[in-house]
Length: 305
Image: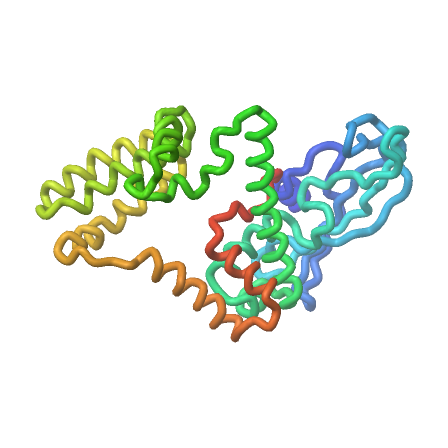
């Protein structure tokens, strides 16, 4: 496979985008520059997809995943189109999100590194500045929160309002509910909502902690594991598999019956985030870091490559 075909496949390029013949290799600078072109046009308007004439072009560069040990740069003269309906709009590019200076695959790698180490360490490994690394973290949190809000809006627009105002009800102990809350919650439990099925699996697993004999607990877990992994709920499947990997340690609880693992895990993660950054002078940055590491958000850019 030639280098042109290789980068076209890696970037997931489709018409009108193509890799030009001049893939530049800078040995002293240890850098590869891949030039991408969109052709002469006309181009589809990024909003209505109506073919439109080109308005102008602007040269832009994006950091991509390294090619071996070489820093890889994608550059392209991105055209703007003159749409009769929406005016002048920039043509959408498949390898990066609007306003980003890195490609989506590079951003995904950066998010994985930022989850495992401090911003300074991740920036050093990625060979980017601290500000660039923090910008990736900030955009990831904003993207995750936006997706969560969008999911909620979609439910409301579809007329699905059963979950409105029930966030904390799923976390309450049933014995602490009022009669009215209990009746309303029972209706939710019997619904076909995914959260109801997940809640039921969670409540069923509570029985595990009542066992005193290891053999009986293992048999119970095997039955529960089958139900969880066949529930068609990806988060519950992931939890079940994680528990199975650590089942030997989980079973030790039956000998002692004492644990504060959940609270300690969240607290230790927050303290680790604070320690690795040597403290935060900006409260918003600290909140962003906590949401990034503990928020359970979908942080990755949409996969289009």
